Amino acid sequence: MPSVAQLVVAHRLPSHTGVPIQRSSSQWTTRSSQLRPPLRKLQSDYDERRLACTGRPQGLRNGADRRDAAALRSFARRRKRLRGAVTSPTMNKSSAQKDESPSELIDARIKELGDWRGKTLSTVRGLIKQADPEVVEEWKWRKASNPGVPVWYHQGPICTGETYKSVVKLTFFKGASLNDASGLFNSSLEGKTRRAIDFHEDDEIDENAFTILIRAAVSLNESSSR
Image 1 (spheres, rainbow, N blue to C red):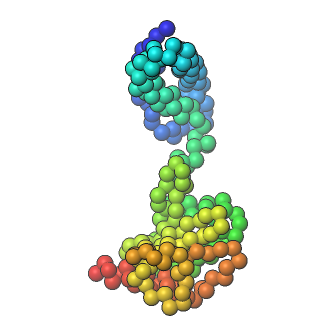
Image 2: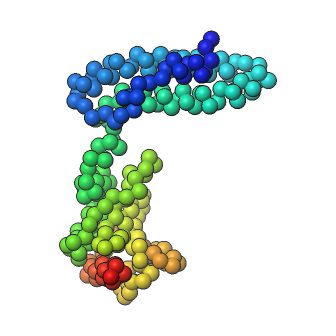
């Protein structure tokens, strides 16, 4: 049986398989049909090798596993890259998100929520844009475990728009420096810099007080940037 290192070399992938797929449906179908057979062979050889390692006597297995560990990891990375290359572009959500503007991503998030959280996020978003017509919408901190968070800017960050199971949270980056005469802040009150507003289901939004708070945050950013 070939070693893990030999299998890795035997299944080295062409460099172009690592390039993000941006092709028509017919091109993808052709490329997919070309890549699926080597992927099946790669999977078969990988499984066979792991089974052989598991079946060794204990003492031999420990030593062999240490020698093979790096090669097995490399083998798995190549398998993952090849597997990604045969994934339909229409199923690649992260790639699609990269082509969308921040405003479109916020629209999609509101639609995806489809409940009181989406309505609340839509309402506060409208109030922010009404209070500051020049506000800039961004989409930040996207990663595998988190689709990202909307953030509103005007000469610096104003606040985020986070959504959780039972709360919509707006975190103001400089909230501790703002005059919150209406007492909207009800979370992160111990922080030295930030303050947050947690909106729960059925909470009424004091639109006038919220608008004043947004404008105060904008004014603070403008004064800080002079």
